[in-house]
Length: 70
Image 1: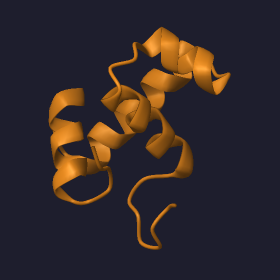
Image 2: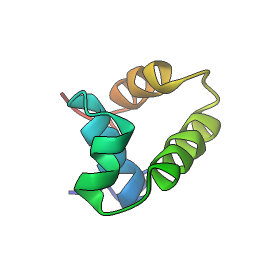
Image 3: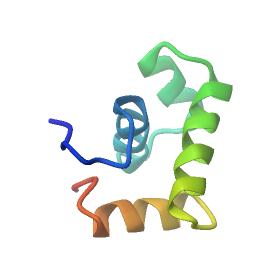
Image 4: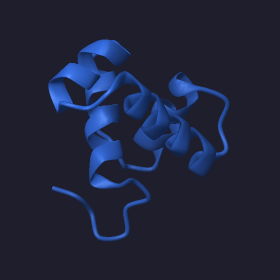
């Protein structure tokens, strides 16, 4: 499923795919068997990579880049 030149790691893609489904940080952590802090770290890393200001902008940019799909 992952694209060859993806800017996202496998785990970042999993986190953002669940964010797209409107899951909370706590729900994502539970689904992926990781801590909420780790979920927040993945989100922060992606926001930094993209140079955007928040989760919503990150999602919009990832959709625009074809990194995520609805």
